[in-house]
Image (cartoon, rainbow, N blue to C red; front, top):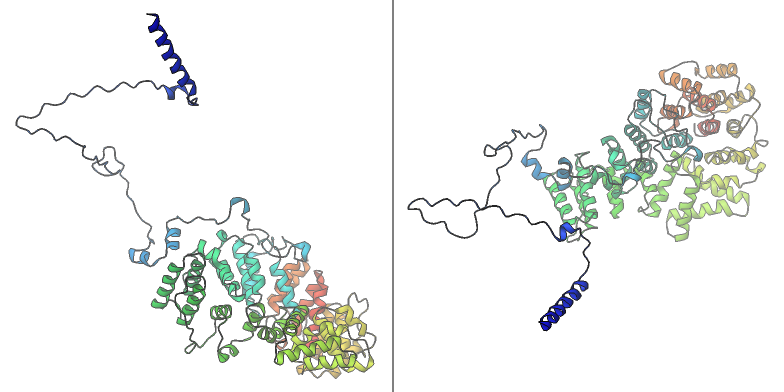
Length: 609
């Protein structure tokens, strides 16, 4: 008996040791020791029918749940599923790519950035008020129809370099949309106008200030044009992939295929581009350029030859992709394209340096690049020692800056100026002209020396010549307009002397001088009206445009005045400008505190008139 008790105690001790070695459970007791669930009572098995064979043993047959809404389901809902009237057919769905189908079915996300990083569509722009931009809310209370009409009606370019610079600053400023206008539409109108005046870089910066999810078709089109103008083909990809159905044209489809290729979907992109080429959804050369561009990101299994034989027109798409790919453009096609493509050449880093230098004159005359930017281009050309006439021009520019004798420097400038028709060359030599001493031996070239300095806004440097130039000369006229903070008015006799010596076509320079001086308040209005009347100019005649810009000036609204001034300066040359328009523009700018811009525009009119 005692031995049995000891064995039982040892067994109990062993069980206790094993229990202590087990890990402790963190679950509640109900999980460790669940209450036993009573087994359901077995249902009475029906007796087999007489003569029936016994049921075979094994797994039971599957049970099929009736679909909701079917007659077989008990308590089913009577729901009728209908598709929208504009839902694509099966044939159309087969031609759509996955991005389009995802967007159609609502499977694509509406936003591509986190909530905390999303931006409201307010204060859209690049330049803030502290950086020289216009007031943010300056257009809040202006009629939306007027702003829309002023922006849409301006087809560009502008006759004035300084007017262009002013309009670019106004369009690029951080602005709120007028009340009653969609802010996205307002951004699209501004970006489109920037594109039309050749400011692709400013337009690209503007559209990038709007989140991709907020784009509409108008803003997508403006952004697409801006990216093509700057050669930034892939810049459109965030919008093209997130909102793929904004456009349906061939260029948009090709851009989306290119974006897909650079996103790692090279095979799908190749199939899409092949389909576009096969069905003729885009011209052959456009599709081939897209295939080569997309192939740079893919496997590149085959070469793509670009043929220009049947191409009669150079388009932004062809120009941008050809420049990005380094494809040579046919000489005839390029020469017939116009100055708009010269400006694109200057702004694209992929363009050969010599061609950028050759195109810089047009861009500088328009106001798109500065004098310092032109000198930088020539400096790069000088540093790389590239042979050709561009290199010789760089050598001449260097002489204009560093030649020992002022006469030698002026000779170099004369060589660059030529006959004076190329205003971009005067922009190029602005800082070299500012280094010249005031010398009676140089007075014969004073108008071009002074005009060159004013082309870059060097008005205080130019005023050094004020005591040396004869009254009534062209150099005097430029300084009378450009002089900062002039307290005395110009005498009528001095203006009459200028008119008597004016040999410009239709005495256009005289008309502009009178209009500029009157607008700046530097010539008595009675004298101005009398002199203008002798030349057939009537400053008192009004139009719908003059009434609006005068009213904007009375309200002291510089943004609206700048936009309306740009509307009044459309044209490709100063022969398209009237003295009456110049008078209203200069006067309005002065009244709203933009006297510096008013002085430069007035002086430019006389220099280029």
